[in-house]
Image 1 (tube, rainbow, N blue to C red):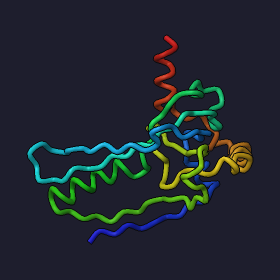
Image 2 (cartoon, helix red, strand yellow):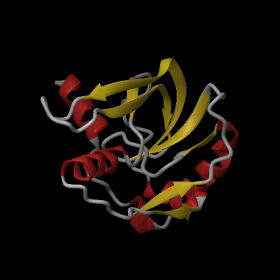
Image 3 (cartoon, helix red, strand yellow):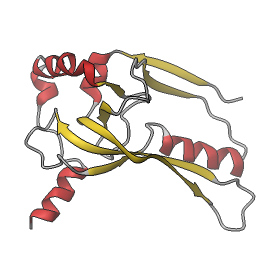
Image 4 (cartoon, rainbow, N blue to C red):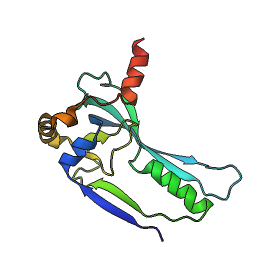
Length: 168
């Protein structure tokens, strides 16, 4: 039997794990679901891929990045792993246990603006990796106080790579 264990993460750890810390506004549609038929003619049921749509207002981790004003689609943190588990479960009957990191956010999805914490692929870096915009000062203070090794140059994420293509 598969089992999911939860690792609860603090806001400080969330800030540290994120490659992008963005102030965003929800777009319409906010959430889209795509049905992926994994193998044609297979008995494996389709997989539902979710994407959250935002407009970037500010980038707190990379203030010089040229992603302000761009529209982005963000996928849930564990979606790639969920797809792999879905395939294994339905293809070979394999059940695996997982450990997943989550942040206990107090933000409501009814809010129009958030601060989101993303990895370089524009996935949420962990589950529930968003906070209310009212937490902005707290997040900025944590960024300011990050250890020097945490501030070290990170490899460019997908948005920087795309930005370079448009500048040419």
